[in-house]
Length: 331
Ligand code: NCD
Image: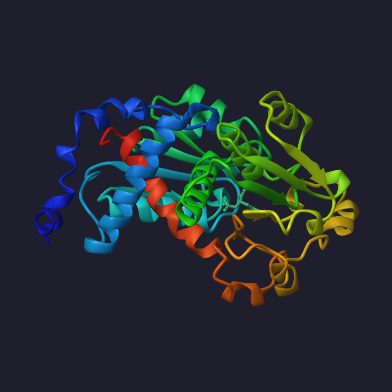
């Protein structure tokens, strides 16, 4: 089936010049959210909306036909890996999936990350990498000649998640400026929180950080928030923020980052978002979570129209389609 003939609206070659200028992402690594300013964010969001429209109408296109993505995951993943794969396939490209555990690759024979990426780039036009060490994506990018996209590096960053999180806030609430955003849970090790906080600093928002003492946001990031004069408060208690929050961004305690598991046991059940807590929140607010959840949000909350976490999952695919198209030069 010739998909592009079905719907001339999606002739991507006829994008206005302005769109081509924005392909500054072409050939670029995506390592950190600090690479994005408000203009490039709204460009990616516009492209993501077009991708959503296109998927709803015709399911896919051949924009990236002949392009190959290597998906290299040294840590478990459900959403990030499958949404990158779905994104690439809906754009007509194909995928080398090393997502079922690098134990089945030569990594288990002791191959270095540098050699693994220098191998994959012989086959693929871009590499999506998830790795348990902070800075691994940067290291891979230093060795690779093809763009490397950071799909989470330890407790460092998770830039594509933050893009889809910000996009979700924008689509759910119609704006980002002016919002009160509360982040709850593991703010110390949660890389999605680190990336999203850095992105939000570009907007006129106020931030609330809710965590147990040992899981507070790292000082380096908190200092950036303060330097930007963003109204900010820290607390241990969701009750302090729930009435005024426009966004409640809930996270899982990152068990795999604890060296002392007894500390994890102490904090793991600290926060549970229940229907009782939701009853205290604004009528128009959203509850988000990067997922997986392990008890932080009760199933009973899922029926609440303010529960946006599965819509957030779907947005991930559109955002990654927009990013892949931009990075692979079909912006
Ligand atoms: C997150 C991650 O891997 O950092 N998951 C995701 O990509 N959606 C959050 C988590 O694992 O808790």
